[in-house]
Length: 570
Image (cartoon, rainbow, N blue to C red):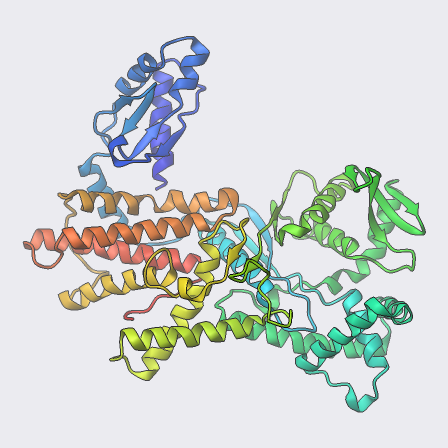
């Protein structure tokens, strides 16, 4: 049940009974306990339109809320209505929640493509891939849980200028020195990139190799295939370690659209959208201007006959809207690509490739060092993502060994893996995705505050209660009774799970779920400190075990939607 929506519908009925049928109820969770559990704020707008006293209208609406799940509504302030759920109704819903389990919600039915991770190949994944990979995977999990048909898209960069530079560089090396391991390729690429920037002759040669590759040259294609196989194997290993749901079947690389690029340009020409500017074929879209206020071209074919990234992206957009038949497509791509994606979506609409579908950019900020500079090595190189993950596990191993030396080494290794990987993911997901954040090992591995270890510990603490009780958390037979404020607060928080999960997708903000899980864990800790679970009478004991079991399941489910695992003990 989406509790907020359930209450919203009841208040909307009260507004209709008072003569305001078209007025939104504007129900929100109450900011403080003294304001109840929820607050309806829509009365003031209704009263203003009717030229009436807001408190008087609020009183009429409150009087018309004849529902059994609320205590007597209270008019507050200039015309708010404070809404408090009845304890008996909360207990009934908790009973139903426990018995119903934690199955997928199936409240949405859209077909959605999520473009995420999407690393450039021929080099190792680095820390810059952390945010799009983790944010995208969390959104996939949440959207699927809500019942959507989600298509994962790993739009890997296996084409373009970087491969032209690499092929041109390898062409100048003796055959015996042409290593194709990923480390070799990365070293070659660094040298090739430097040459491309400083040597115009080499740059021209590299551009020529791009055209040869795009034209299907056999020798270039054979080398390229070696690059790709090595790179994809590396990505798969990182995804496996990082508990990311992407597989090789989700890869639809840039090269997959090669054959479509000439057709795209021809179609745009036939529609009269193409203008030739300095030899390049461009689309000038209304509303896009450069720094000089001159129209900004969207180049779909360069003067040398090659195709820029935009052409490939247009082909991908047409494929997703047409052949995949998506209702929505989300691009989890860094904020610097905002202009590019705005142009892409506008071009897609102008060409008729997008017709009413929701194509949306899901941008994010940067990861910084503690000095506020980009998170790179001392010599300015990208930090390898696999190195970050291995260090996270190693640091977590040290923490776990200190906190629980009684665990066996195999247990410590498993806990360290779950805690370390979870800590890195949660540190990312708990932030508003648009904000830059500082990568801080101590903060993310802390067992205090809004961290994965804190939530994982809360889960293990509940599991230890059931071990001490020698009880099966999945087979309790009890009637839920609520008698203490902390008990009530925890139950209300548990009933707010679905509305929270749905809210995540409203703005594609996984941190909404993180905040909820942190508040849930805090509520449980308060409950545990003030409401003895195992020492009370049997009815109270069993009721509280049901509450504990539901809390553990909700924590575990919420973390799993973020791609974070739990363990039985830490």
